[in-house]
Image (cartoon, rainbow, N blue to C red; front, side, top):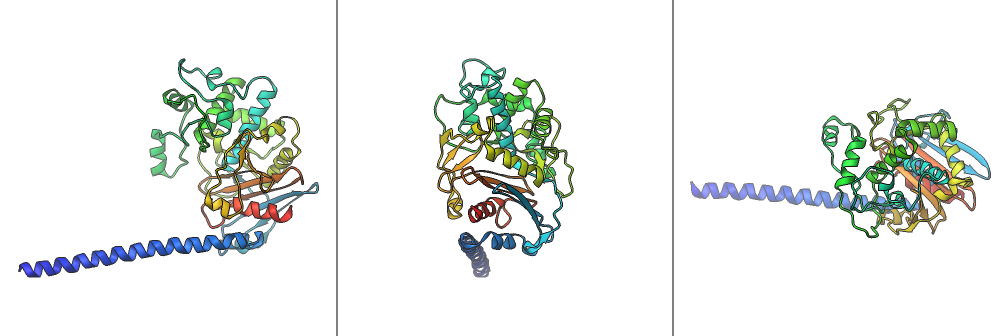
Amino acid sequence: MKEAKKLKFKKLLMIIITVMVCIVVAIVGYIQYGKYQLSKIPALSFKEALEYTTQENKNAVITVGIVKNGNVSYKVYGENGEELPSELHTYEIGSLTKTLTSALISKAIDEGKISLDDTIDNYLDLPEGKHYPTIMQLLTHTSGYKAYYLESPMVKSFFTGRNDFYGITDEMVLKQIKKAKLKNQVYSFKYSNFGYATLGLVLEAVYDKEYTDLMNEYMQKELGLTATMISDGKGDLSNYWDWKTGDAYMSAGAVTSNIVDMLSYLKLQMKEQGYFKRCHESLMKINTSSKRYEAMGIHMDEIAMAWIIDRENHIIWHNGGTDDYNCYMGFNVETQTGVIIISNLSPSYRIPATVLGVKLLTEIN
């Protein structure tokens, strides 16, 4: 009886070991396959990369805009890179929102309402005797703040499939600012949505207006981007993020827009007139390109007011992504060439807009 049990146990153990080995081999194989696929991307042209990204995806709708030699044009692509009718679609632009937040900060600097070197306790009601980051540190993701801080609404959003930042209020962000223990030192670059939520609070304080109303008025009335707005969850595509009135993280990634408005915004950036020029002036060296980015020829050498500076390619750029959308805006001030790519695909789906955008910008420069 004991021998039979031992034999049965050995067989079970061998089965478990065999299954585990198979799983490990499969994972290693998948990783190696992924690396192999990744290694092929740099050699692809923009057209080839676009075709691969949309291959056999009937839901793909990628709009590509170009500014070159004073001319503005755009095309819409669908499955297998096939050109679609030039209709306007509403896309989430994710973290490209940060460039609009920083533009409004730059405007406030011109108006004498904000100073780059001021710490945030100059604008927010915060306890004395603590160290707080400057406006410049928040703009450049060098504040020392985490990417985000866990809040109870995040747990609920995880189970309901909502936007992670849904229901996080100004009061919650202020509470975290008060709790954070920062040192009076230079922090390294660490991308922070929380930092831009904090900038949103600063803007609300200096303009005495809720961020949604403030930004909608700024984009639509001052910049003339009439189809650009803080998302209301509506549009001709699908799976837009939900936002709750007054959500604090809107200043980090809640804007929706279409290609016509984004091309107008791109032209405003490229002209560098007025306070837009300040938005692109380098504030800090960061040298934080990931290995994946470097393999694609994408560089993060310096940072300005939200905008990333790629010195090697002479490109100023920013990207954005939500669960089901991703985008890229990049331009060369010297050649006055720029591209904007907005996609209804996830940032992790095949080749993201950032890689597509760099390929296209490099080809047309």
